[in-house]
Length: 183
Image (tube, rainbow, N blue to C red; front, side, top):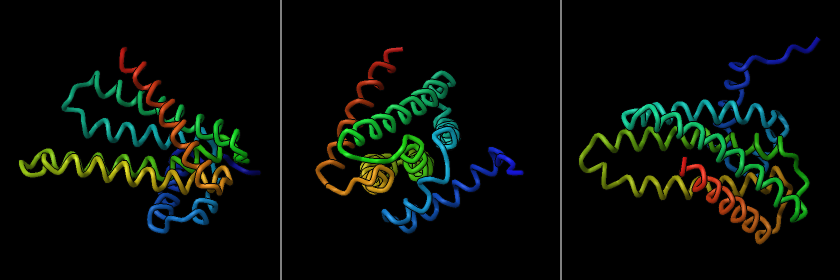
């Protein structure tokens, strides 16, 4: 009889897979793990990362923490859904579970890592001036891993289709985040 793994087991497995994805970035590494989990697993992993990064920014207030966690989860889901939907329009063959799981493997740990770096820089006077560089590094890292993840999870290989998929997902998510920020 197959027992369903606990949330703790799933998170520990995803942490180990994330380490592999971040230290050996390639389409092949992503492909090892793309079918190992579900969108539900991905959302739990991202929720944990959102809570951790929210705690790092808690001095901003509890309302900001709650809003940040919700916006992060909704933003992640919208982005992954749009990558899946638009990528399929471009000839991609992956499932929503594969796309969500693949993206969570790099997105969650990078969010926590850059959250920690930002907090460390905030407590030093000179560090405050380095925060924009950390933000740029975070964007570059996320774009790089997203490009690999689209190739793996959607089996897209044409550069133009990959970029178009990522741009459409980014713009759609930006619109949703702007709407959510009104509340």
